[in-house]
Amino acid sequence: MNTNVESNTKPDYDRPINDIACYVTDYVIAHDTLYDTARYCLMDTLGCGFLALRYPECAKHLGPVVAGTLVPNGARVPGTQFELDPIKAAFDIGCIIRWLDFNDTWLAAEWGHPSDNMGGILAVADYVSRQRLARGHKPLSMKDVLTAMIKAHEIQGVLALENSFNRVGLDHVILVKIASTAVVTQLLGGNRADIMAALSQALVDGQSLRTYRHSPNTGSRKSWAAGDATSRAVRLAMMTLSGEMGYPSVLSAKTWGFYQVLFNGKAFTLPQPYGEYVMDNVLFKISFPAEFHAQTAIECAVKLHPAVVNCLADIDRIELTTHQSAIRIISKQGALHNPADRDHCLQYMVAIGLLFGELNADHYEDEIATDSRIDALREKMQVAEDPQYTKDYLDPSKRSIANAVQVFFKDGSSTEQVVVAYPLGHKFRRAEGIPLLQAKFARNVKTRFPGKQAKAIVEICNDKAAFEKLPVNEFMALLII
Image (tube, rainbow, N blue to C red; front, top):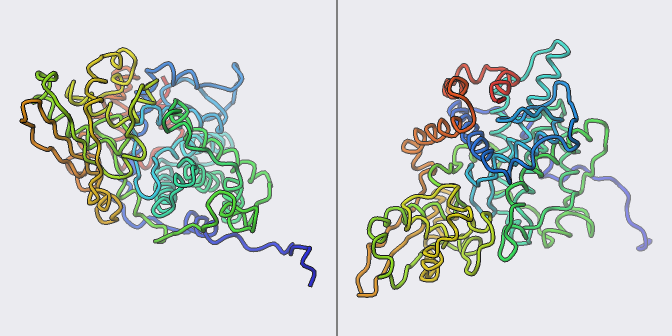
């Protein structure tokens, strides 16, 4: 046997790629209530995008790559007048919905925001619908969009359950690229073989580092990285459907495969089949535009605001009790250089809650951040892990995101320790949260659209039957300003 040659026998596609493709093409959503959650998710995600359009640093990224480019029957960008090719439209939609860190969240071994996939889904669904109409065919419906969202959520979330990309330095937007690639390939007319080929392209890409999310480099790329990922998914799907080949053993190939090069030689662990788990358990950001591991800490701080705001000079220390993931991602000291740095600082967000009794996107801007009281409070904060909080965070039956805050004064007295285990957007608080989520959406719509148009958007989104039947192109037309 000649040991100086390698076998060139092409293998079947790696099992994880095949499993995703089969799920996308074959799985039928069994529980109709999941479409309600998906619709609320779509509403909330779009609302976050409308709110982000108030910020010039976000808006500067939008529009055609080359000014003046026209795309007949292209994809629209909600809240704007842009009509773009679906690749750039996916980037723009992904950029606006993630800019303020206010859309949904998934927390497991890996973190992320499954609604980031909506950038590619909405852009492709609008483009496909308009192209179909131009040829005299039936457009996609908004229920098709919701189905794609449910499946993208599931792919991203199940892959995240026990596979920690952050532990090897990779950013979670790799999961956006994978999930978006799978569902948009199907929306574009691809079959199972096409989906597998496109997925292999997504995995063979060099993947984003987490550099821009962490001290001392935290910056605004984290606000458009998911837009970039979902846009890349659309590009790869379209290339595949033009006949570009796939790479079956992209994950498992010796020496050159993803596992060997980027995942310390480990194969993906998939503890459960793809189904309906993730959308059913997704976390909504209802209260605060903030990194999700801090949501309950801010809620604690807001509750303590009346007890501390008039005696700030008397504070000796502030004890923050949290879980391991919060410590790894958002516990930091020293100067904070920009809004992206501040919305990923646990101590900054808690200080805002204690000082103002609320937290909104404007609190991250320089005008507020120069308030010397904020850094004074940060310096008095002590962060500690409660192992039980970390255990409950990883427990699939709980998925707690617990935080506690207690303020101690120089005279030896203290406030109560305020503990919040589950944030308002958690499944355990759905009944409390959904009306507030709907109100959040209505407020955000009004920041972008005149009264009559805003009313029409809110009404159609709250009408389940009419919304699901609505052609995608008609819904997107409602969102042009």
